[in-house]
Length: 209
Image 1 (cartoon, rainbow, N blue to C red):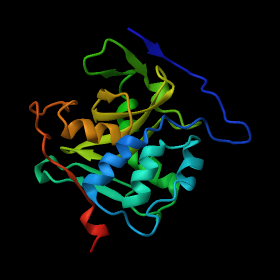
Image 2 (cartoon, rainbow, N blue to C red):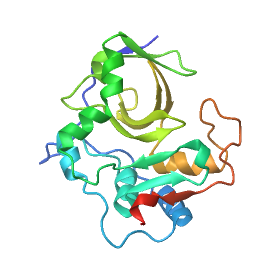
Image 3 (cartoon, rainbow, N blue to C red):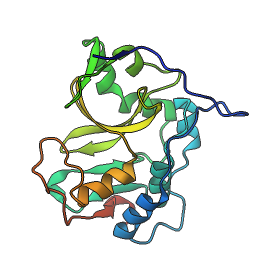
Image 4 (tube, one colour):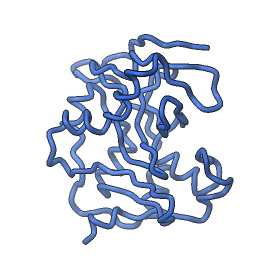
């Protein structure tokens, strides 16, 4: 069992923000090819949210949301949505806090969070951190919340699917996850193998009306 209490990622010179996550343009290009032409206008300005988080958001998430504002699966029953939500109309701190509410509520009841298929556990003190934030809700799948999680074991953003105090953790970016889902290289929990194979993604319909 590995209990993580604190981690000290490096800080970029001249910046208040911690180092950004990995960037693989190939995965973004593949997802973009499925969705189609991006909006001519930028759909997401990450800076206000990043100032609240105290970290730069993953570049693939920023690129995807900047191009489309929101992405859904062509499989309607999957209820897969990755979005910037309010389009910047909310106060960014309120947006982060309300998005993370379910995590914070449960964290008050559990001393540690566990991961599916892994022996390690993460102290809730890491999850509850706000200087900087280590959790940021970005959407949902099958009614379960989907978060970016700054994983101290890799000192980088990862993607987690939350289910109480038990999380499924993907150590990669959002675009990489989407690509590997439709190729059958990643199977989400509680789904049959190959569930997403042959499916694709669309821009969130409300943004194209």
